Amino acid sequence: MRTVKKGVIPAAQVFAEARKRPGYAEAYDALEEEFSLVTALIKARTNSGLTQAELAERMSTTQAVIARLEAGGRRPSTRTLERLAKATGHRLEISFVPEDKQASRRASR
Image 1: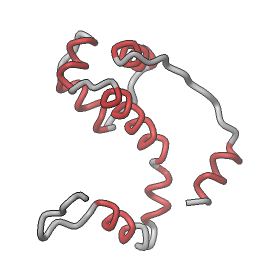
Image 2 (image 1 turned 120 degrees about the vertical axis):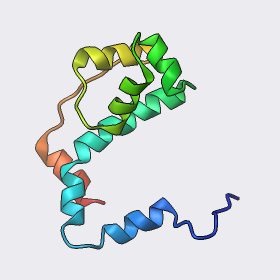
Image 3 (image 1 turned 180 degrees about the vertical axis):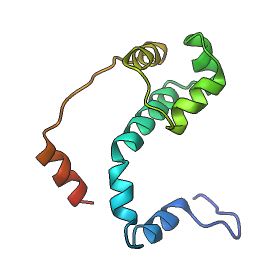
Image 4 (image 1 turned 60 degrees about the horizontal axis):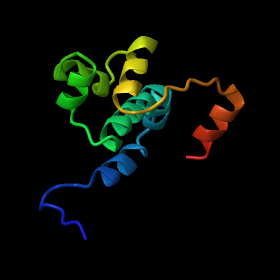
């Protein structure tokens, strides 16, 4: 069992409380695509057992660039995503999802 430091509020609790605020859920959902991409980037790296620095070295870039990618401030190019996929032992796959399926996924949350 994981112990929580005294005075620290678990992230799940903070998120659940934030979603109750007016407008929060709509604003969060509007950023869903960006969050999904950032999550996928981080999972690809961590599932490969790489640090940001190790991934940067494999991609011939710097750790700061990887940190910025994972922070989600900008959308990476397809070329960058391909390089990241190769460096983490993955294959890049891009798909188009009909709007109605995407909307129903949001509504189920």
